[in-house]
Length: 560
Image: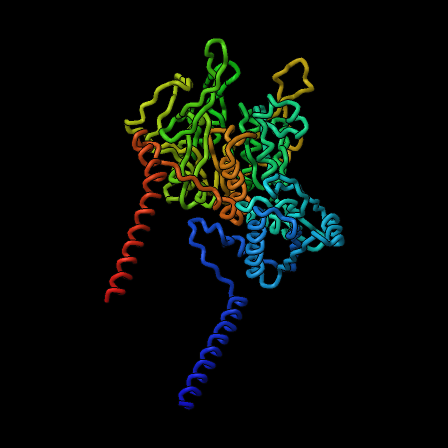
C-alpha cells in the first residue's frame, strides 16, 4: 500500500515537473521566436510583411515612448491601449533588438508629464460616462518615435485601424537617409495646392484643390509644384515622380519638358481630362480641345474623348424645385463609376489590396502599344477596370441624374487607369527642341525664340526602364473625394517612387462587401433580409437543437 502511494506521489511529481519544464521551454521559444495566429482575411491583428521587413532592416536603435494615462482612461479607450501594447510587442519581436519600447503613465507623475510635454505631446480631451453623466477628462494617449536627433510625434492614438501604417511610415521616414521628391504640374488647369487659411476663406474654390493628397504624400515625400515649363524650365532633376494634374492643354515646350523628364528615367502619372464638366449652371459636358493625345499615344496609350457609365456606380445628390422650395434628392448615378475589388489588377501592389473607389465623369484609357519585330516593347497593365456592363457616351453627353439606363444588355469592360513600363522612345526623337515665347518682342505676340541653355542641350531619345500611369480623370482626388480615392493615388506614387514597402499596410484595412449591383432590387432585398433575420434565427435554431440533443443524452444516461 505504501509502495503504491510512493509510486503515485513520484508519478505526480514527475508529471508536475514535466508540465513546468514544458511551460519554461514554451516561454523561451515564445520569447525567441514570435508567432501569432490571425484568421482574419486581411490579417488586421498582425503586422504586415512590409513592417516586419522594415523592423528587420533597422541598423540602429529606435526608441518608441508611449505616454498613456492608464489610471484615468475612459473605459472605451482601455481596449485601444491594449491593442497598442500588443502591436508594439510584435514590432519589438521582429526588430532584432533595435527597437526599444517604453510605456509611461503620466497620471500621477509630474516628471513624466513634463517629459511628455518636452517631447511635444499634450493632454487630449476624452469623454467618459460615470453615474449616467457625461464628463470630459484630460489624459495623455500619444507616442514619440526617437532615432538619433530625429523624432516623430503621434499626439493621439485613437485610430486603431490605421495604427500600423502610422507607426511604420514614421519609422521608415525617421530612419531614411534620403527623402524623395514628388512634383505636381498643374499647367493651365483648374487644380492647385492652396494654403489652408486661404482655402477656409474661399470655400467655393476649395473643391478643386489637392490639399488632402498633398498632406498624405508629405508623410513620406517632399511635395513640390513644378511650373514654368512653357518658358523652357526643365523639370528639376531631383523630382522622382511627376504628376501631370489636369492641365487643359499643353503647349509644345511643356510636352517637350515632360518628355525629357521621362527620358531621364523619371516616373510619370498623367491625369488627363478629355471631357470638360461644367457644374456652374446645371450639368454640362463638352469635349476638351486637348493636344496631349499625340504625346501619350506615342508612349503606348490614349485617353478617349468619352464618359463612362457602369452598372456599378455611386449616388449623386442634387436639388429639385418643389413648390417653390429647393429640396435635396439622392439617386443612383451611373456616370459616377464605382470600381469594386474585381476591377483592380490582382498582380499590382498599388491596387491589389483595394476594394473600391469612385470616378466622377471619367474617360476611359485605350492601350495602343505594340511590340517590335523582336518581341520587345512597352508592357501595358490595366490597373483599374469597369464591370463588363459598362457603357460610354461619345457625342451627346446627357448628364441628367434622372436619365434611365439599361444595363441588362451586355456592355464592355473599359480600362480606367493603365500602367506602361519599359524603355520609351522620345516623342521628339529626330526633331528640334521647341522654341519658347519671346516676351520681349512686343510688336509680335507670336514671336518665338530658343530658351536659355538650348544651345548646349541635346534631346534624349531613349529612356532607361521606367513607368508611366495614364488616367482619364483629374477630379477623383480633389479635396472631399472618398478616402479610397486618396489611398489609390498615394499608393500609385509610393509604388512608382519607393516600391511596395507601405502599400500593403495602408490597403489592408479598406474593405467593402457590397451586394452585386447586377442583381434585381428584389434579390438584393432578399439577401439583406436573410442576413438580418434568417441568419440569426438559424443560429438560435441550431442552439435549441443542440440543447435538446444534450438533454436527451443526459436523460438516457440517467435511465440506464
